[in-house]
Length: 295
Image (cartoon, rainbow, N blue to C red; front, side, top):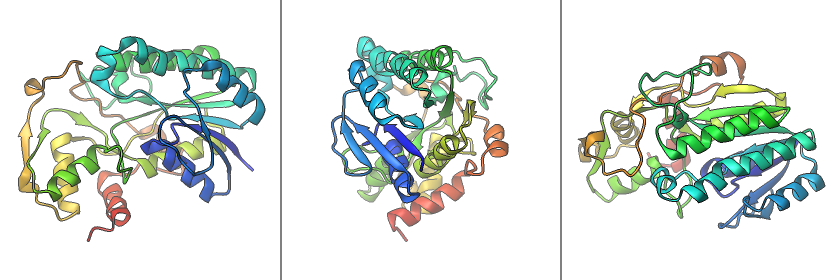
């Protein structure tokens, strides 16, 4: 039986990994911080407390650690750099060292924001060049994993969405909520991403753990779209009023941190390597529609 330790257990991705792993009969131990969960075998822990994670891994001796936890507030990282460094970089240094000590496969969920967005359609061999502090901390996490851990996989992804939780909206659920309330939403026409459904990504991560896959793999959705196009496709799929979606542009945004213009990811490697293929946006939205029970 596969034994997994999953961080970010109360998050959009981590909780989906846990639920899917439990469905498959795996022994799942899940770390959460603020929002208590019941799935798997939950452990309350602030990952910044490095001495405790070492004790947990020593006691459990998991086959793999799937690290989904992160401080993902891009503007927040720009302002709270000390905390962002601890949460996104130092934690990885500890996890990499711990996984190396106990011969554990470390799977690190990284971000399309390690790229500058000048070109888009980034492959695993393209050189990262982050333009935000968030992207920089995620890249440094990657470097710690590669330099310290013997068995590792870096799974880069983009704009995770899904059914999620009431206490934390994601891009899709926020937009659905606004449109159901008949409020206008402004979505960017000139920022391009590879939206990734949490269920699809969880399936890819579990396969990486099952097969002990190593190296860098881009595990995003298989469709490049602007955020505006994503919103329109979602509204059409769920029979919501797409006329409430208005166009906006990056130059209008009052961000504290820069964002990549086109951070879309090339998933050709994952399409060949994995049985759980990155899904096209239309297929993912069909699944989301069923999950939300919207007709």
